[in-house]
Image (cartoon, rainbow, N blue to C red; front, side, top):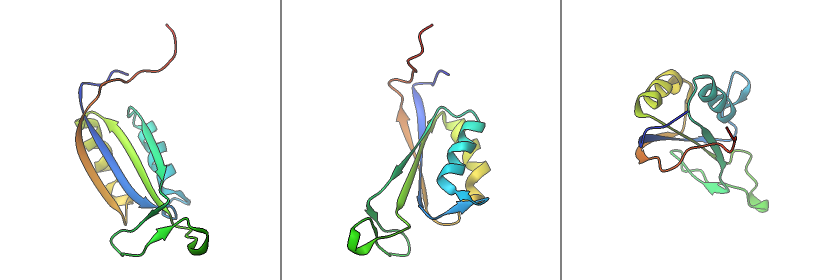
Length: 113
């Protein structure tokens, strides 16, 4: 897949314990992005954070949280990102979703022709 120079970054902040259809929400989002043919997705697990409820989530051993912050990043063209967001927006019940315009400098795999 070739990406245009001008792309969009979709960043979804959710909690580790968020689920959809009995699987982790972050996993469902990545699988759905793959099904829709988006260029790629990456999930990051945070070690500390807080959101709209102002409750701190941390991985510190004395304050062990089972709901650590999760960030799902997806990059593709603005049209494809908008279509994806329209199809998954109702599934995200709590969290934060942001969009950023971005320039794609390199997108390739290591498979030799």
